[in-house]
Image (cartoon, rainbow, N blue to C red; front, side, top):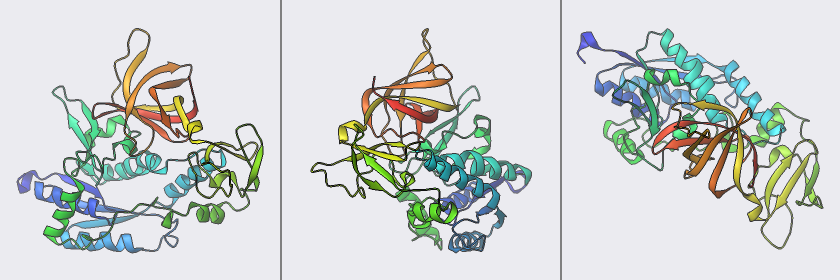
Length: 358
């Protein structure tokens, strides 16, 4: 792009390596780049600048681009409310997928449009491609280890043409190498493994600090209802969990279910975690599959981040969708998402509401 033809890209900058390199790559392509950092109130000192914000500002200074810090305290408060409510219901929340729809590719994307941007970019490892007829599709990132397409299933289809993922075609190893080559101040910063509003991964502390008194002790029972022990709140357990049960059963046992109404944690052997079918709600389509005359479609589906997608059949069941796997999958969990693929193209996904065996 020549100077007169430069288009503007707004990059969501988190203070991490990926978003910083994404901004650099867009600059190298000739975009007029500016950054935006989301300041949240939870877990960061009630909105005061934290280390991530300082890192984002340092990177912007080094790249010689402007950066705007926006207060998204209200949006994150709503996200935390969803997070806690899901645990109260005996479900396991997926805050990153919800955030991607409502905040990053919702409120923040709209802000980029308001600022006159021609595209909104992030450091996600995923791709957006356009076919010969002008349709846009979300695809897996080239790096299978870092692919984040699962967490992006819920973004709005109409926003795809406005979104750019500069890192989608490269590997994390190459991203680190680029950061070293240009001397980014965050080049040695480790990847975050935590939910952004749960520092240290201790969601119990967040729960107790935000909603004290909602959890209460109850029984840990086997699948027959026999009491095996006590828990200090079903909110602090997730399906598939093995550690921290405090029960000497002689064989490995796992959390296989949660009954929020009875305040019970249900445990059982590993085989009780296996399911081959689940009902889905809130399905979001990015590219609808081809349904046969019986209203069924063959897809490949993943039930959690980093879960290798497996062959499955998708069909409508009343007001919900029914997803049936060819082979049983482990620890399909209500509250998590099932995401559908056709090869490396994301078709869409929905929220798991119940699981069972056919």
